[in-house]
Picture 1: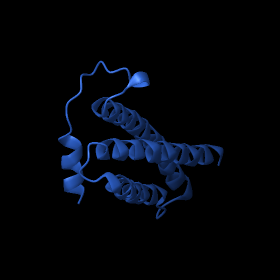
Picture 2: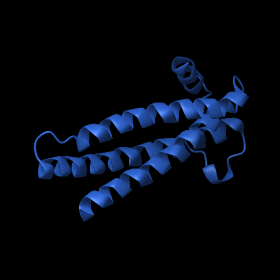
Picture 3: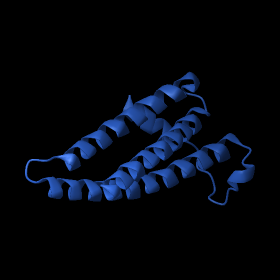
Picture 4: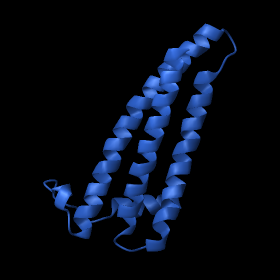
Length: 130
């Protein structure tokens, strides 16, 4: 299923990169803008994850041998990515095969990724306070 979803996303029509997303009108433009929003959220997610992992390493170091905060966060992130991808595939499925499906999936990924970024920064703040 993931492979099919990736093919749908990858085979969408190309859109010129000079699209003004504040006034996007065509489906291609809206899909392009949704993808750009997701890509920006994903870049922020990478920064938030790195920050949270650094804090988890410090927690492990301070608690001593055998602690696994870093491992728990790594596994949680892997599980979350799978959740996000499956949840967004489901959200897009009512439009399955249609031109709006990729836009819905990208928008979902952007929304869920932005929520996850906030969660990772919360973990970072907790670790820095502790």
